[in-house]
Amino acid sequence: MNKVVAGPDVATHDIKDGATLLLGGFGLCGIPENCISSLVKKGIKELTCISNNAGVDDFGIGLLLQRKQVRKMISSYVGENAEFERQMLSGELQVELIPQGTLATRCLAAGYGMPAIFTPAGVGTEVAAGKEVRNFNGKDYLLEYAFDADFAIVKAWKGDTMGNLIFHATARNFNPLMAMAGKITIAEVEELVPAGSLDPDAIHTPGIYVHRIFEGKNYEKRIEQRTIRKA
Image (cartoon, rainbow, N blue to C red; front, side, top):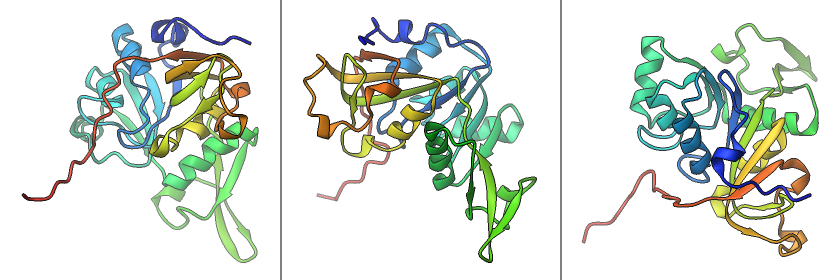
């Protein structure tokens, strides 16, 4: 049951060109920085990245975008990345924008083993183009499929050798949902502790969902939008 690996390069060793990845985080909070850096270093290409957002130009998924390693982005919000905008407008990058709640629920469905969901979000908009619409009790809903991702890559505050995870504050965003949804889930943590050290009632993601875990290093923990008062 010991799921510890030596580091990000080992954890991501079997991610190949063309893989589909779920990447945890919201804005710049809870980003699996070490694994992303490993993918950048390895030069893995033609990736489909499913993430709430696309990072910024020189951080997070933005590093993969800078090096043209991403073929398609499936996201909810992408407004902080100028390189993403450039690639999308030039046709270099395929983009699927979906409502944030739909993104979360498609992760949840994958984790629960459900093939699809029905949601009212996007009915009557461009989001509904080409999708099945079904009426329940007088209201229209879109059919949306659960994500089918090869890997989920998440970042947690604490984890143990069995893969149990605790997320800190806002970093408990898409990370727990995505950890459930990947065929193989890789978790990097700020602190790795022995099995049995964590309070069972405090665990957010049970180790049954996690396949590989390692203690990360040198987290930047950037602030996306710094707002200060005048002196």
